[in-house]
Length: 77
Image 1: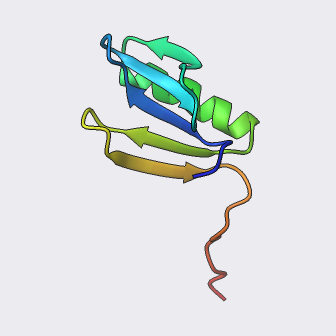
Image 2: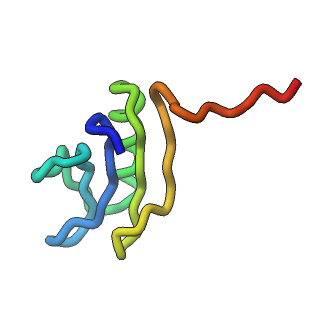
Image 3: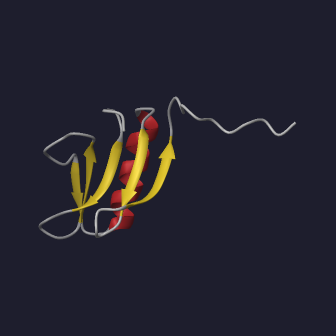
């Protein structure tokens, strides 16, 4: 995971938070995961970052790359 990546994670106080990798504080807190995903996705796109969505147990459920993807899809020619 790169330092520039953004993560949607469950908040200990309830709800969901968006954090940068390695950050101790959240960028922003939301009541629903959908709101956090929308904000985090936009933030990752603006920063050309990796974007991760975690489930309630902390496991990564979804990953998207909005930047320099180290493993881009192959051409299907």
